[in-house]
Image 1 (cartoon, rainbow, N blue to C red):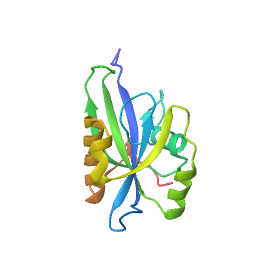
Image 2: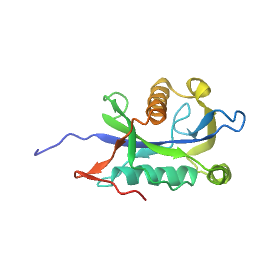
Image 3: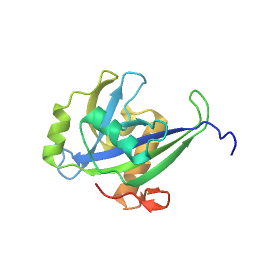
Length: 162
């Protein structure tokens, strides 16, 4: 292609912990961005020539303090051009955190463009997320729950764990 179209690629992570209020349930880690209404999964856009899983990992670390191996894609969400350029958003499996990891997140100071970090049970997601963000998180959670993720490939080779 002589002039490929510009397209945004977003990379988010679904990170879970055991819900402290209900031992038989999980809560998802969400960020409260200052630049938009509603909570979102941690993540953001990739830079030019940045590997997709490393973009997700960079945003996850900056926003939450977590450094996780992100190599399984749970869902892909195409976003047509409207208020933002056309984009494709990938949600990676961050997995289930240990108590120590969850405590570290609770102590993390996010950057100024993030008002805070919140753990929300699945039943409360619709109340705190914009509709598109809610559907993305719900689909990713369903894929995680059923082991339906896909491995990320770079030029046909699976991204190594770690």
